[in-house]
Length: 490
Image (cartoon, rainbow, N blue to C red; front, side):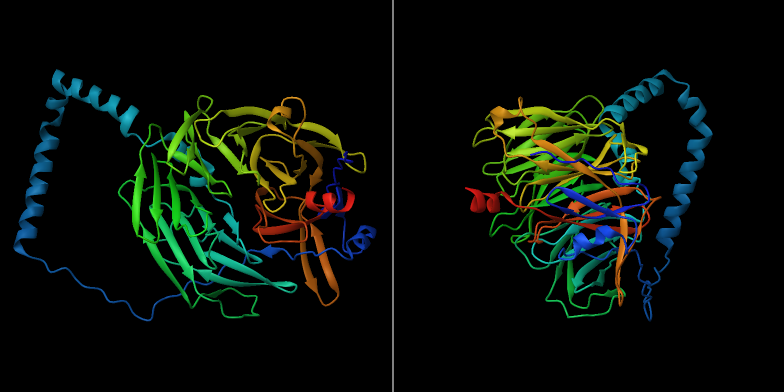
């Protein structure tokens, strides 16, 4: 199968894909809109922050002063004064210099906070949208904006209703993840712990303005070594209540059991972790290291196999194929798509690691023959988990998103045949439904931050794209699935 590989003009926005053809239009009255008469389109989500709630009253207790506390403070001040007076003489001694050299060595190699924390976008995120996650069974999307609240959007006909989760513990939110085998359990990774919300049956609401949840409770998971939470992953197997937690400040993989309220720590060598991806079968858990080493875990016995990272690099993005044998990933600052292929039933079996696609920046012509830059350094990747036939790639500093068709080929064919076929490139479009129908406006000056395919959309695939202007746009993909092809033509 071959595709036209179209590049839309800057004045156009992409609304849908119809069997490999991307539909990009300039405005709501464009001729291309007629092709979308039977295509389910989604309105965009536009950032609208909720007003913080102030308490009616606050009870404060004053700590009673006493003579012991005053005496303690006087002693501390006296010792500090004496130290400052004698410090120059102490620092001039050889013993002090030797002790300082030992401390600096230990601090640099063992105690110093990983450089990943100061350089990784997760912990230096000044964008309007921090992260987002689709619900596994509902037409619902959870979004974290820059106020560290979680906005849970649910589609009702042609509009989004919104309810909000908030708590003082939710500071520095970096990641969110819905529990697969649950109606309303959402884990939120924060700077110093994890907030696990349980949302009871939701009250039907037609109000599009954000309102607070009235029926949600939260459990806070905090450990001594649980700082700078970077990624979360729920075990997708039936009956499981395990949540995997990664920290950029520690190489320890934390497994929290919600049912038993018990936490297990799997300590391994390394300098922190930045990414976790659990395969949909629950057999494998990929742990992306901050530097040096990543790991593939076999969850049947929690044995692991090391995967070496290039020096100074970490895994930027990763996503499992629905076959549970192939993990697509990219490295920070690189323009290559790699795959890890598992050939056996245990983690000790062969893991084949190879590059399958290069996305180096190149010049292509748009539909109107205008040269534009496509590709570049990969920022994010996402696979359609329901069908496993579409892969979207977001690039750093480029408004165009690459869309690939994925082929089902065996492990032995990977070296000879490409698993990816480029369909074309997407541009952002802000859409809304009014009494007059669909209104759309191309987003010409915005850049994509991340993308995620819906886990519940059953009419093809639905891609959500977060943009740096605080908007989330949606692209509907309709195509013949592999199952439909077999039913019709085989």
